[in-house]
Structure formats: structure tokens, C-alpha cells
Image 1: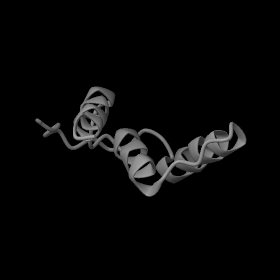
Image 2: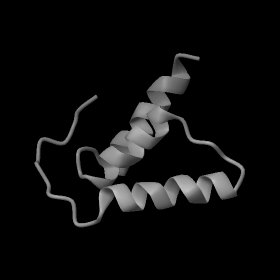
Image 3: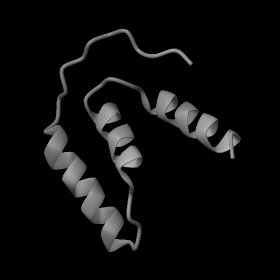
Length: 64
């Protein structure tokens, strides 16, 4: 899997947005684990693209 090589400064308050995502998931009855929250953090801060995050999930669930 390739990763983005471009260093991007986040345009959002990453921690604030991450807290909002986590709370919304909890209110919907979902409880994201640390791995899922880390993946969301890396999307928000520009370390990976959403497509790269989906590729990580595909790889994770392909293993079973």
C-alpha cells in the first residue's frame, strides 16, 4: 500500500473534530476502537486520504 508523501497542515481542529466524530458514533450506538479513531485522526490531519483508509480496512478484513 502506498501512502501520501505530502506533508499537509490540517485545516481543521483535528482533536475537536475527532471528539465530535466519536460522540456522534456513541450516540448512534457505535463505540469506535482506538484503531478506528486513529484512522480518522490520520485522515483529518492529512497523513492519509480517505481512499488509503478504505484500503487499510480492506486489508484488515481480508485477513479475517
